[in-house]
Image (cartoon, rainbow, N blue to C red; front, top):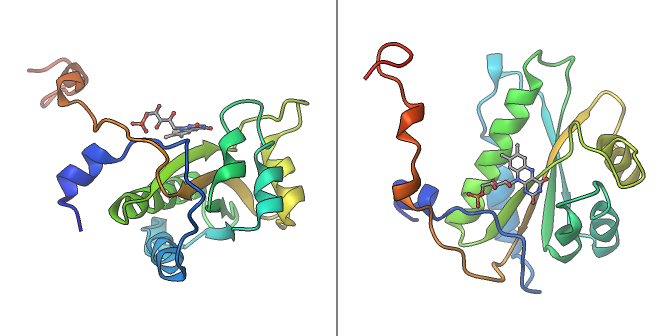
Length: 178
Ligand SMILES: Cc1cc2nc3c(=O)[nH]c(=O)nc-3n(C[C@H](O)[C@H](O)[C@H](O)COP(=O)(O)O)c2cc1C
């Protein structure tokens, strides 16, 4: 277990992966992190689809015009969906679960990347959520927020550089306050 401050500094988006598969234990650990994510009013409005089937991963790589093609090379994709009828703040619930999965992946020494699905489109102009729904048979009541791509890191990335922290975005006591 990394020190948490180090973990958040080291988590950088990974878009290049090795061929190594994940162990069943790693997959279970990642899914447990998703299921332990906090939700408003404990609605647990999310549902997760774990995809390790290469054919489906190749298909999902086309879910948006840009920045999803590496999905074809990952060991695991966790598709994060939520039910708007179960919570009016399903986007927040699903977003928190998405980052919890990413932080758990980093703690396991794995690389991950958030792929945005909501409000995105395929190269042909189809809404990305409809495309993903079709590939994975997702029922209509669930909205697709993101796909978290996970695998063994295929390159090194520098940790976050604290020199670049935007302290000017922090306001003390009132906006613009010192
Ligand atoms: C809401 C959200 C949507 C994102 N969508 C994508 C995406 O579709 N494809 C992608 O490659 N990266 C995506 N990212 C990753 C960001 O590009 C990345 O987090 C950002 O550039 C900062 O880099 P870092 O994660 O390495 O610190 C997304 C991140 C967030 C939080």
